[in-house]
Image (cartoon, rainbow, N blue to C red; front, side):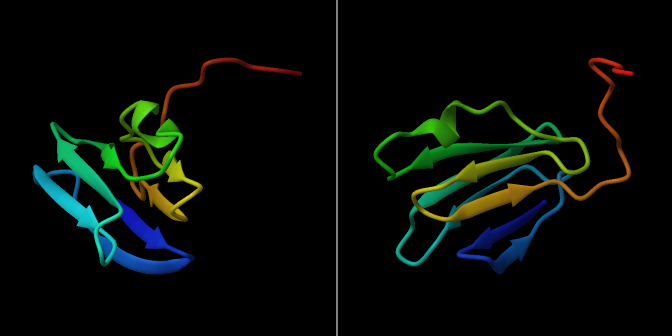
Length: 87
């Protein structure tokens, strides 16, 4: 995963290694990587929508905290499954 804060790269982390990542200085959000998936665990934003998003693991999936301007994006060879086909 790649984490950006205000559009600037904060760090890149492997989904293969379980860990907890405090994001920001001071810490604004906490991202947890567990069992090959990343999830926003904690956030100090008022709406907390980012912590209610599902865990991500497929290429180009993301979790976004708009108030804190934090974006967590998966960069992977693993593609998600199609959920619909439209002509």
